[in-house]
Image (cartoon, rainbow, N blue to C red):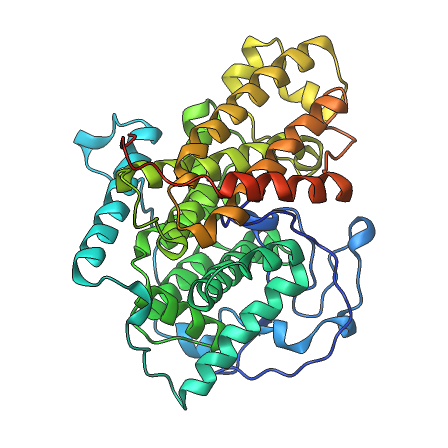
Length: 435
């Protein structure tokens, strides 16, 4: 999947050899992380088992030990085993059932924006809040953040380099969010996905509650616990990421774009929204807080739509079709055509419309990037420009996203960085607030 923190430029699924040591606050089963919202199709080793596909096969002995932390350890969930499957944004009263997915998501945008406004009224500097007290010493907190950074450097090197352009406080906060998203995605998209039940996701959500109550389960949780106590991020965004994982357990088709939009929000738009408080809005910006959040949401949606279009063939081999069923039918296509994987004129015409929609979301996000703090604009611009080029590569492949994977080569990536830097120098609006 995509940024899908806002910064992800070029996720990598390569696993390199390395050595290290790890210690967690509690013992438990060990799990490795991958990310739907960030590197949706990465393949990793989990609990000593190999994920047996394509070139990503690796020996578990090559994995850095610090990457294995308890995920659903019994010591945490012994009193939570009967949690029911819950819905987050979809839990609404009868009077709200008529709301479209876009309206529901917009309500979340307003909620998060209001949280930031309250925070800004109470302090002029988000980074001066005192650190939370953790078991042991504050040295453990520094170590926890350091290990989050090592995970980012190991599995998303370009993303990691982009974070180095930020202030230390913002950089490590993004690392902590990145790692949590990877671990969450691994539950339903990793080697042990077939064994994950809705109850397991309920336990993961209960663990999330502990993070926000400053009761972290392990070191990586501790880093996120400190992050969410420092920056104004609503827990609902994290709950909604888990809701997207629930959808992947039971849902493999989307009847229209309204349904697909909600899924894209859950697995990618949420990450855009939770990143904005960390990225920061330029002090001189006159844009409304809501408009900046809408732009972040649009970038997350655009990135996820791009991932979907890039991975049509790969998803079909897993029995999933993340394309609006009604639009396929209108184009004279069916699930059978997807599984057959033949590029026809009907398919080309269908793909042109899907790419057009994704590009519109990218365009809608551009204005908001200019309103971010100066230290955050360059990596976010790079993310947008590089991810948007994936759509160009799909076109260059004659819309064959069944057997060819669209990617941006290294030369184009390097060539994009100075363009992104130049765009990052454009100051925020000081005369007219956009909506």
